[in-house]
Length: 283
Ligand SMILES: Nc1ncnc2c1ncn2[C@@H]1O[C@H](COP(=O)(O)OP(=O)(O)OP(=O)(O)O)[C@@H](O)[C@H]1O
Image (cartoon, rainbow, N blue to C red; front, top):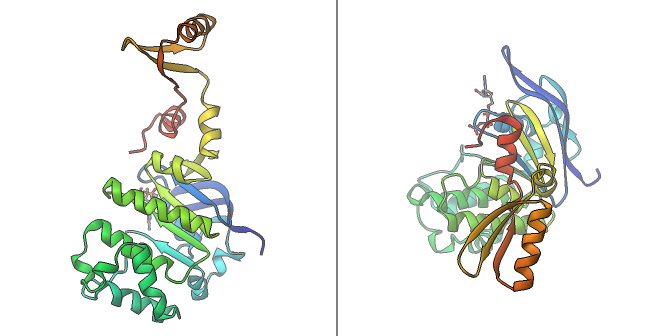
């Protein structure tokens, strides 16, 4: 197997007569994060279910760690981790015992549990029943369970949805650490900022079709047809200017007078690109 940890080509999925994935393709390598972005019903979870062997595609080919998804058996779960809202956490068991249960299932030494609990910020809560954790703590426990066996590939379905910004940031930090360690992460999200910050590549999914695929920067730059600048001068005035000869003269004048306090170029965001391409918002 090479560094291509996930690949799918011309993947389609039909439920009865409803074609919910239409000829989608993407590749994810070791140590990369791929963001799968789209509004509710776009087909994100269906894609994860196909890649993790829970659903069969109607056509096309998908491989995870070199194995065709049609041929996936239980052994793949030793090498992949999955975080979805169907958490599989046992509410009456303590945080520690939840991880102990999964450690035994996955042949992970019990000594690995405490360092992971420390790393994920749940060590002080290890004796608490999982049912009494806050939403953010529960999400961290679900993530801890998914990475306990150090999988090569991690699937995350909306990992920070509904979390407070601080917990979301902590989870982002952990995901970047996991990526650095070589894990390939397949992430679905509605959150464009999250995607821009974390993902090496993103696929914008709309009604089962990938409408854009690339690095967040390249996608935004592609739609940066109307270049604009936002300027704030020292007298407090604000100016939004389209790129033109007149704007260049104005900017040059302000620069020579040394009166510019801040200047920003207004590139499109993934959110505005999505709106441009589909006429829809992501949320
Ligand atoms: N088992 C199923 N049978 C029939 N239709 C299904 C089934 N599972 C999903 N669908 C349909 O497929 C489409 C894509 O659903 P999917 O759950 O993949 O969307 P999603 O992008 O993950 O949405 P969300 O962000 O709300 O989770 C939806 O129209 C959904 O109703």
